[in-house]
Amino acid sequence: MADFFEIDFLDVEADRSGDAITLRYEVDGATYVHVVDGGFQDTGSSVVAHIKKHYGGTTHIHNVVATHPDGDHAGGLRTVLEECDVDALWMLRPWIYADELILRFPRFTSVDNLKKRLREVYPNIAALEEIAEAQGIPICAPFQGSRIGAFTVMTPSRQRYLDLVVSSKKTPEGAIADQERALSALYEAIGRAVAKAANFVKAAWGAEVFSTEKTSAENEMSVVQYALLSGRRILLTADTGCDGLNEAADYAPTVGLALPGINDFQVPHHGSRRNVSTAVLDRWLGARLSQKLEAPKFSAIISSAKKDEDHPRKAVVRAMIHRGGSVATTEGKTVCASQNIHRPGWSSLTPLDYPDEQEE
Image 1 (cartoon, rainbow, N blue to C red):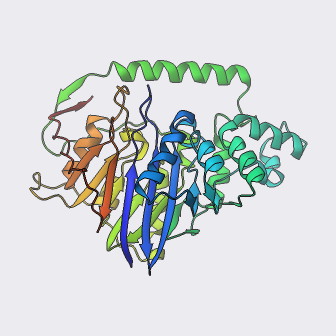
Image 2 (image 1 turned 60 degrees about the vertical axis):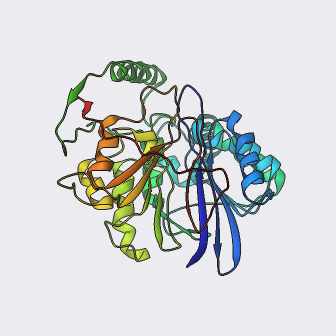
């Protein structure tokens, strides 16, 4: 049982949302510092400064986790690795599995060429690998069941991760040609434009409408972590989608986690409608209630930027409140979830109001 913990969801303010999370906790008298993602490249210095200011001036980090390859999560970790004393970097690198993946990429006959291509399509984590090797930082693979300090990796499993690498639209020959890939990117851009113009409709309490479109393979690669700290059950989801959340829920009994029953829940992918469903949220957070609770059952934290008009989605905010959650977004402020910690000058957050409308 931990004696205290503090988890800070830093404000990553850009045109798009990003994730940068720092943690400090104590177990059996020993204190640990843990970083999960670092936002964009420009965010890295803010992560380091926050740790120095609020974690006793230290630059020693026991574990750094790059949850997946996207630049809004992995970019800022370059600065963290360069400026801090890091014991271990946890991240998944597809190219180290090239020898077993090559048979699934028909147009590649050379393992070395496949490795090279995979490094090219995932430049953010390739850069982290180079820095870690130069700094002498061990790189560990956070597959399901791995222990990262007090946290357990709930997903992805090794096989599911390799399947995602093959199915990703980014990976070579996976199997769409460059012209098809460009056309796919165009369709995605059109889809984002349509999403921005989405209409809102009045909705009764309990009504939920989520996207039928799945999130990207890269998002589904996200490392999901669970810990029991100071009696609170904490789930850090990064950008995982419904498949990842279901795989994690299936694994929950292995770590003694009875669902539903999360106390501090990171809402995946900045509150996107593509990453959750009614059934998935029922598994993790419980069924919808008949009315809003006066005293919340759990906290739901969303990393979202002020300028990001797409996140969080109102349908997702509603879904958290339907299950008894108190919802907070970063949007220009750092959100701290803690137990047995008091910071002078910090005040309690006002949770988001319940939206009476949602996206069609």
